[in-house]
Length: 257
Image (cartoon, rainbow, N blue to C red; front, side, top):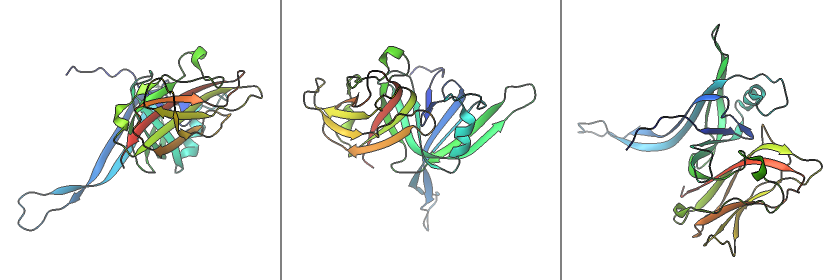
């Protein structure tokens, strides 16, 4: 197995992409060790207890000088102790890339700096709802090229064959609405569909995200739906009119928890 130089990852918190400000990120997934040692044991024995999820990242601090979604200070400040911030860390921007996502509570926000150096910050977050961390796949990423951003109802992601779905009980999705440009236009409503073939001759709606016209802080949503034997999945948009544009990032994954 070849070594890997870590150069890129995509980091999202609700409707903000943090990739351009983050310089380091980490994700910890574990289980609490519970002492099961009994009399006559010669070794301390443990069994796995409750699972734990923790994420942290550090980056460069930005003041709220504009209405841009890059104004990180107010968003992180407001999230402290608040449940439900949707976090995704993806190993690449292309659809089909590995991703990890969870609903979080932000536990620590630390702006920090040393004289003569760039002013930075640290953020820590932990899972605050089941099933905790989901190991998933980027299903739809319309952030890279403006011509592929979500517009009219015909906007549909590439169909992906996700064979690990067949043995799982629940499908999960994490949607981030990163930009929204419209002029009295109908809002964005994203659906995740499944089928037993790539042609999607008889698609089944797995779940439907809430109709939205906003982006940025707070514009993230978590969904879950009953699993099925289908292995092909795609995302589609049921609402936005032709004079609106939305940049979205959507991951889905499967769990038997």
